[in-house]
Length: 407
Image (cartoon, rainbow, N blue to C red; front, side):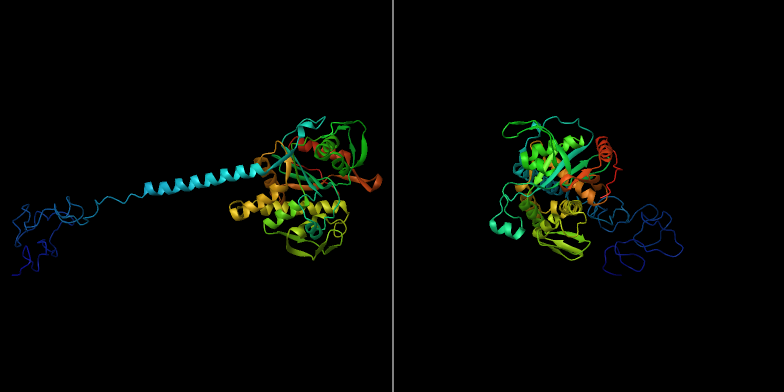
């Protein structure tokens, strides 16, 4: 005999349950088989066994994989920890914070846009085609630059401002196309009304394209481009020397692969062949260089400008800049302070312009010079009119551009 409840012995476990014997039928996870008997404490088939223990009320009811009346998993019915509401609250809070930040950033940036160009005063405008056309202008404006900055950037100190670069960016279903307009292009400046004076000028001039901007600024430049191409300009964006250099510095410089050594005392360009990261000062000297490593002077320079602007857009329109406030705000601040746009330009339009330039750099679009036929009076460049007409028609129809420029 022993002192265990239910008579612990070699044939029974501590709960009084008979142990299995070879060749004796036994039910695996319920009560005992009705034909089993002959052991102490067992009253016969179907009689059950009473050890003095509860029939399951203490441990939890039901036969759940253990012996009759005994729950082998007493905590199965414990209520689960409820994490859903807390998780949802955290997610909702994060979404609200992100939306607040995004909306605040949008209105902050929108308020800084300098919408100073009124395209509604441009006369005799062509019919609009498919897609969106941007006229992107780099001016030699020295606005906001100190005497020391002008010296460091080698901008000179000439009064007023002139166009240093001009490009048409077409954005549409046929893929973005970036077309440089050499400032030495020989064009017609049509009759116009002064944007500030209101005076009407009725004579037609045949001269270099950059003369249009120097005479009456952006409105006359847009009118001249539209007159000579037949392509309607939807939006205008212009940036000066200082703003250009600040944007480059704000994004931490722009990596360029320079194909050959360049040294130009006028622009300050001094580069060795190969990959390198250009800061604002170096970038400005690179895009302004006309005398070294540019081939055909103005045409070669426009190609360098395209490459650099596309690379700048490619590096700026990235998650590492857009989602990082410590890079986004300085970059936007540097650009928006000096970027002059038309009155109808929205941040959405501006973003579309930059992402299209990024696509051009990524090979999803095309970049080219306006097709040139040869030289014109005064060392200017004559456009290839049949090719220009074909190019404009493809842009108007929003088709993939197949026209090429030989230079």
